[in-house]
Image (tube, rainbow, N blue to C red; front, side):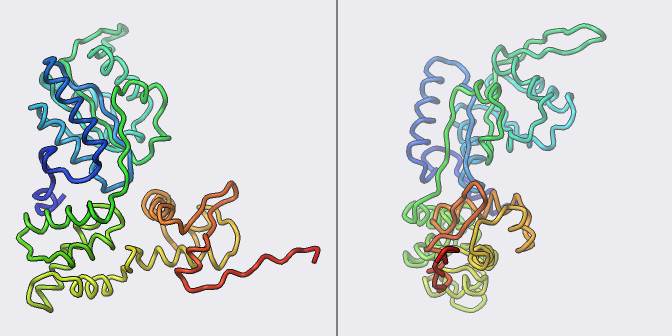
Length: 319
């Protein structure tokens, strides 16, 4: 994470824009836990990348007056990696584990007693020795909620799903980021970035920085709607936030005419399968350009309209 991205991360609930119901639920849980002088229950945050899961984890730690320890599940390879982190925590600390669905099953087994009883079962010689942990909160984030095992999922007392942001919410995010970064921007410029931000604060903030570069290099430095349009055109980003690879994906589906499997689609557009499934497809589904069927992905009439292609009628074999 670069310095600018870190500087615009919200630190408190009052700074966090959007996800109204999720924020309200978490604020209630924090107030109740603090009122009882207890640790916050374990929290599972799900949703697409860039919607604020990591920011909410840090906010929860700050609101509880706790330190936030950060780990990425793919980097926790050995038993000692996880036990070392758990043993290093102080009372009421928060352990944030990103991409929890990629945690190895043998490490999950360590988490079960740790989450339920604040206990580690360590193997010493041929004996299992229980070791008491200080009370802590596990906050886990994932983009693949369906890949989390049911025993692990059941141990989270709080589960919240983050949705895509509305253009109005994203406009507020852009204006806040511009203010922190000292970037002059008017209402039309913020709204234009929000319109092209794919409902995702991380993407909108990235487009804000690129619009700033364009404004400083070619204009007077102030970001207006026309500046955003020029910058977005240079990047190949259209009014709905779709880029060249998104349009290539839709073109492939349209050209095929029928359902296309994920591996075939990835090979056709030379894009990684996980990038299609986790980054591109969810937004295209949200916009109604793609449908999933048991046989694969198909383009909707809206996709044909976007690409200015007339959908060919199906010809019956018996006509």
